[in-house]
Image (cartoon, rainbow, N blue to C red; front, side, top):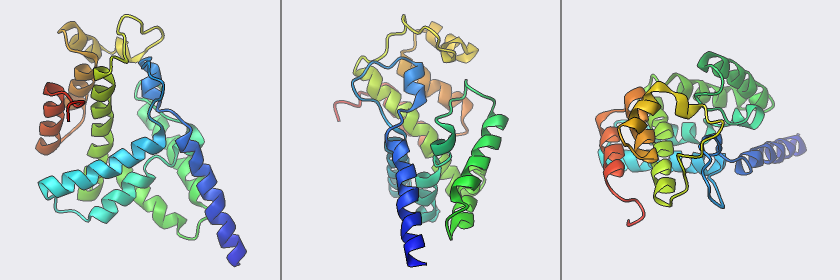
Length: 213
C-alpha cells in the first residue's frame, strides 16, 4: 500500500514536469522574441505570489490558503490539453475538455475529488477566494506583457498568423496608438470583471516602467 502511495506521488509530479517545459501559448501567438519565455509552471507561481501580495496589501477577507491552493492547481488540466488561449477554441469547449482532463488526472489520487472541487470552484469564480485567484490569473498575464514589451520583445509589424490581433477591440486599441502591452492591459480591463484594487494595479503598470523597480 505504501509503495502504491509513493508511486502515485512520483508519477503525478512527473506529469507536472510537463508544465515546466511548456511555454505559455499567448507569447508564441504574439511572436514574443525572447531567449526564454514564461512556462506554465512559472505562471502558476506568479498567480500564487500575486494572490499573497493582493491579500497583504488590500486585506481581502478571504482564506488565503484556499486562494493559493486554487492558484497552484488551476492549470493542471493543461498537462492533458495544452495551453488554451481565448482566440483558439470556444470557452464552452475549453471548459468541457479541461474538466474531463482534470477528472482523469486526479482520479488516481486519494484526495482527488477534493482537489477537483477546488479546481471547479476556481473555474466558477463565484466565492471570494476563487474571485481573487481568478483575477490574479488574468492580471499576471497582463503584467507580464508589460515586462516583455519594455524589453522590446514584440514587433507589431510582424504578426503573421496571429488571430488575436484581428479581434475588433484589439484593433481599436492599437489604432488609438496604444503600445502592445497597454493594448493587452486595457483589453483585459474591458473584458474581465476586475475589482478596483486590481484595476489600480494594472493602470499603475500601464503608466510606469516595471524594469526600474
